[in-house]
Amino acid sequence: MCNVKRNPILQSLIDDNLVSDPASARGRLLKEAARLFRDKGYERTTVRDLAAAVGIQSGSLFHHFRSKEEILKAVMVETIRLNTALMQAAVSAADTPRDRLRALIRTELESINGRTGEAMAVLVYEWRSLSEPARTEILALREIYEGLWLEVLRQLRSQGDLAADPFVVRRLLTGALSWTITWYRPERGELSLDGLTEQVMTMMGLS
Amino acid sequence: MCNVKRNPILQSLIDDNLVSDPASARGRLLKEAARLFRDKGYERTTVRDLAAAVGIQSGSLFHHFRSKEEILKAVMVETIRLNTALMQAAVSAADTPRDRLRALIRTELESINGRTGEAMAVLVYEWRSLSEPARTEILALREIYEGLWLEVLRQLRSQGDLAADPFVVRRLLTGALSWTITWYRPERGELSLDGLTEQVMTMMGLS
DNA sequence: CGATACCAAGCAAGCGCTTGGTTTGTAAAC
DNA sequence: GTTTACAAACCAAGCGCTTGCTTGGTATCG
Image (cartoon, rainbow over all chains, first blue to last red; front, side, top):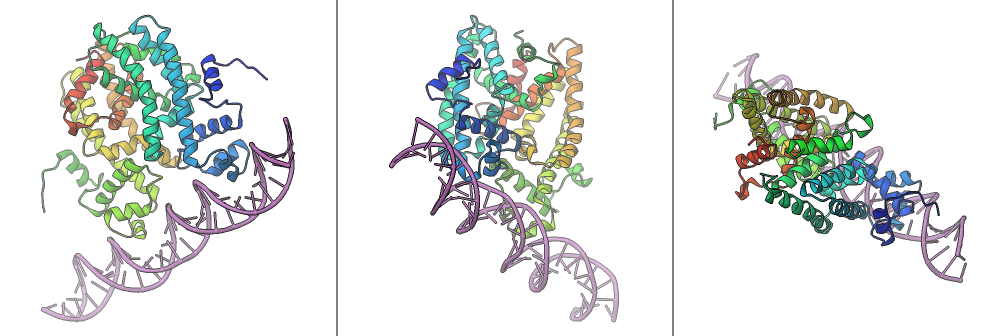
């Protein structure tokens, strides 16, 4: 019905049933869950909190999800799916390895600090709350995502623009970028997302 | 009595009652608490877990600490105190800004991945579990610590070795270094702490 | 009619913490 | 050198509350 402007990548994932429509009951719950999990942590968030956030009784949650953990897992799975797709698009739109890296950094920063930020923070900081089987499942999805980064970093290295080990650099960058959520406030206007991206590139001597 | 070799900086902090002796009852509890909090998270760790780890009943814990949160706070406070002292020593032992940065990076990596690693991880990833008053208290202590970094980064910038904003760089580094705890395994021997330090310096174009 | 979404009520288990009493270490008093 | 005194350290038991989740029933709608 109300076709508000929406990212075409997100739309195609919704059409393929890989990500829940944020307008649906399930999608709204997942969005609220991500926010609560980020703000209070998974353990401190009760099923009553989750239910209240979407205006239903706590018991009714279990019509949509079999357990509280399944909600956490769903938040993570859908977040990885969306971000992998966004990353792939960003990489293929850039021409040089340097621009590809810039695109990856910019996209990841946007994922962390933009609309999907809550879910992204949950993905990064709450995975200890997953049971072992769920953990391996998530890990498998992450590897596709990480492969994108490694390929670009290897390109940069082979053309002499990167002196350090791509593997190590990616991991240092993972920490550096995800940590921005604890301090970076885009709405304050001092530093834009593009500006922050350039700061990262500059620190790496790639400005 | 049994005077095993011990870091003199740690020893002086113990003598001043700023850090608990790891041999004392309190010190042993804090060490076990740090390990449990890192492995399972603060919320998932019960007072019964904590008590069992040092071989007492759960109720007996409250002879030493008024609440579970006080244990978390004590872990954090003592960790900051120790690491601030270690950092100050590391900085004053180096001659050039570049060496001072290297010393800071190396010391922080050691704090995170060495003996005090458990407590350090708790400090970084569990502060959401603190109540508001405890949070501001911890934050005040952190500022001394952060001041050390900023001064060295400003020195580097003023001599042209750093192009990016010191403030932003420190925050990127905080994330990059603390994240190593999730992937770096010094015991595996592929990459030493010195090697990792050099990788960070190389990434910043300061090798 | 039948499926879907929900509510009202509550259960069993686990939580942080309290309580009243016992052991243990220490050091002065006799 | 034994006794007395006393505080610190600890145990056993359990209280009051919250937790994730279940159950049985009801409203809504194609």
